Image: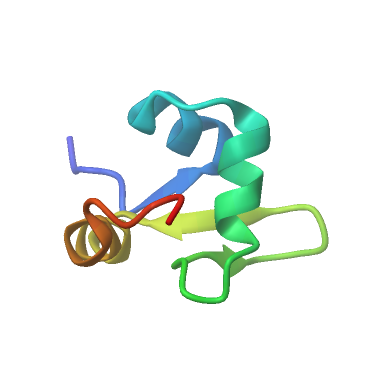
Length: 62
């Protein structure tokens, strides 16, 4: 089975161990990697998320 290329907002919250409201706050950030597929569907590319986490380690909330 292949690894998923994207995560839903619910999956993002689960993977990061954060609440869904906090995950939605993250995707509203201009620097956060998310793609709006339709009016109601937002996905987060896994590779871009990893890069963003590495670049922002220790800076979230600051």
